Length: 62
Image: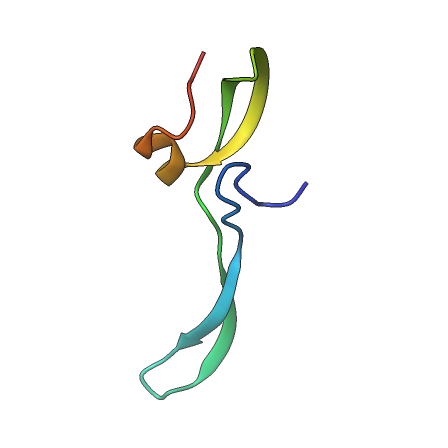
């Protein structure tokens, strides 16, 4: 299962750690996902939703 929001599609992003000496190492930023029970088309479903979508009211919790 991928780390991806079921509503907005936000997923992992890669980049670099940069030290004071300007050394670069790879790193990954992961989205803050929460499993939430919601109502979709009249039926109950469990979705993986980022907290930004949850906070902005894009889904209806049970």
